[in-house]
Image (cartoon, rainbow, N blue to C red):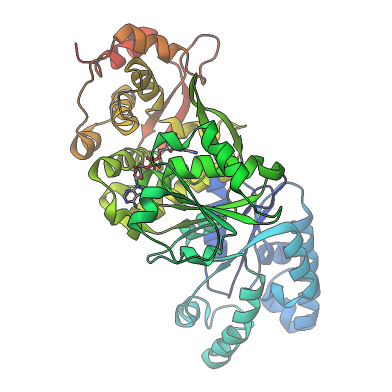
Length: 466
Ligand SMILES: NC(=O)c1ccc[n+]([C@@H]2O[C@H](COP(=O)([O-])OP(=O)(O)OC[C@H]3O[C@@H](n4cnc5c(N)ncnc54)[C@H](O)[C@@H]3O)[C@@H](O)[C@H]2O)c1
């Protein structure tokens, strides 16, 4: 990250919002998904001092607020990043607002006042006794929440996206990114022109953007300040090369991604991996450099050629199998939102590929990379992933119909020995043993799985046309 502040990486994810917004339920879910401890400050106040209603009645609101401030301060000073759900009125304290600015990425969990009242009204809450004053309080607090929040959200998926600075918008508001310079795929710019005043630099379409000579040209052309923002507008190749330029130019400048392909929106633009290709292999020079924002507009996908959509669908099915949700059955917005939120959750859990949790994203990819290598990179990545998913499902003992129905992969004519040799070189392997990502069930990935070699080779052979 080059010491930069991106979303909730390395800091607390704090949930604020009105009572009845669901901060406790959503917070607990988010914490479980990203492998962090969960703190609910109301529960903590009650654990230490007894029921809040009683505190209000016996000691008054001011004293309750003072006790709450201490609990929040303690939670925010913990060194291990947590998910913290704050009581609805906690942000009334100036000291708490300052601590939130310093130590947390703050997400405002939105709720409509009528829903909030039906959940929290009349209940055992001192400030929810009659609807009129409840709604008045709601309106008073809104500006305060907006002032404190880095992102706003409705539900778990949104919080996960917001936690990594990702927004899914139904219509293009990407211009709100206000770039200091835009790096665009020239074909995308022709299809979806933009009315911007900043300098626009173009890169070629496709893998030929991820080359050192393109990087050099961009370095030379850039006149971005150390604090400026570079925005990438295009598919995964554009975001990979732009992110790499941002990671290296003046030792790292801020960047944002505005992905325009399905692969970009569900995968490449999220997770901080940037890089270019070398003669000796793909993605061999690169850096982790998270974009501070990712703006996803599913409408841009309407012009995507069918083969590019298919490439993205292979990743959508992979993600759906990992998450246990049929994302491929949703409309574009739902599909992209679900997949992007899943990838964001895995990246928040393991931002720099250090704990192994991120390895699950390789479902089907060990086979895919082997087939691509054996084809001399003639086989398209999406088609290779489709075949790899077939093998992973078969070895998991699970039905393969989703992959067959949506992607209909056909065995490929490559040399089996060459593919096997490539599989044995996979970087996840340890001490010469192939380590696979498989599924106990949809939604329950397991890694690492080591199976007898003969079984893995037989699964690979089924993908190869003889
Ligand atoms: N960084 C990561 O974590 C990560 C993850 C997955 C893939 N990748 C990388 O992403 C790259 C593949 O990305 P990709 O599949 O988006 O390819 P791409 O960027 O080459 O785009 C594919 C094609 O679609 C065109 N296109 C883009 N947007 C369009 C639109 N809205 N309408 C019509 N055409 C459009 C492009 O001009 C190009 O010809 C690979 O280099 C891969 O290594 C990176």
